[in-house]
Structures are given as C-alpha cells and as structure tokens.
Length: 137
Image (cartoon, rainbow, N blue to C red; front, side, top):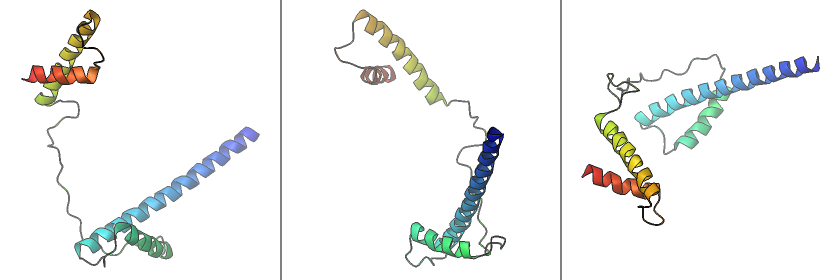
C-alpha cells in the first residue's frame, strides 16, 4: 500500500512540476514576443532583456492566464539555414575527405607507434596535425 501511495505522490508532483514548467515556458514565449516587438519599434527605453523580462513577468503574472496576448506584429518566417536537399546522414565531399585522411593517418600512427618511429612524447593530436598537413599538401 505504501509503495502505491508513494508512486501516486511522485506522479502528482511530476505533473505539478511539468505544468509549472509549461506555464513558465508560455510566459517566456509571450515576453520574448513582446521584447522583439518593442525592440523593433525602438520602445525599450534602454532596458536590456533581463530588465524587460522581470517587468514582463510581473505584468504577465498579474494578468489572467486565459487572456490572449496583445496583438503582436506578425513574425516573418525565417529562411532555413540549410538547403532542403541536405540529408542528415550525408557528408559533404570535404568532410568525407577529412574522414579519409583521419583514417589513413590513424593507420599510419598505429604502424609508426608499434615500430617505435614516433618522436618521444608525441601524442596523437600532434601526429594527426602533421599527417593531415602532409596529406593535404
């Protein structure tokens, strides 16, 4: 019985924390939109984001939660920074060449290290830098 009670309490606490985090996220979104609008209209009055957020949270907390936000100017959609044809798993030719050089240098590092041909105290980063420069050039 005690196990079920503690499980139920944990669920209630998690839901309460989740709801308050969601409400805080809504306030951040609303205040962020107001800040961007004020910034675009040059009506910040010298306030930085932290000062504006503190004032906005005070007014947002006093306002009823169900009230819609003030009419904010329409936000223009931002163009995607990556082309749509770019696949997440695909590598650019330059990236593929770098990986090929790294693999080749890794094989050379293992062979040189086993043969004792690496300078005393040289670590992989130094070897990779020299090998990469040599293979590029």
